Length: 134
Image (cartoon, rainbow, N blue to C red; front, top):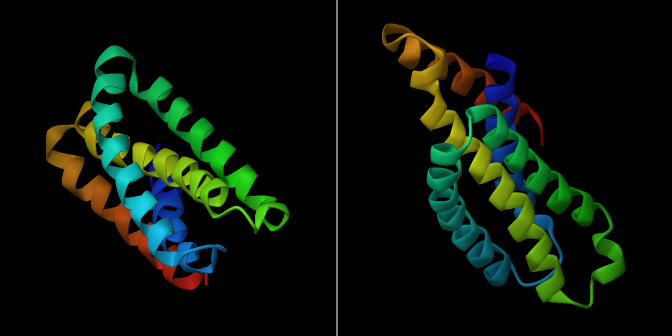
């Protein structure tokens, strides 16, 4: 479970680093990313309440996969800024949803005394890997 949280945090921060290299308007891309993050936090609350953490992660990673897969082929859509912004929205939405699920599900997975330590170790590993990635 710790590797899943570390991978989620790496994806979340790496999208923010990569976002400035996505073609199109920087202002539009960062605005869309911010709105998608707010919307993802709202959706996680409802999804986590109705489903288990496993299904919430599955949905989040599937959405992030769709957005990331579409961004692979972004060179074919360089003329359409709004389409690329939609791809960024999907990727950022899925990563933000998975990141919020990490915060919510930690007390359900680990004993209360170890929650801070477990998430701190995951954060340390993920931020170090994000720093090394570029």
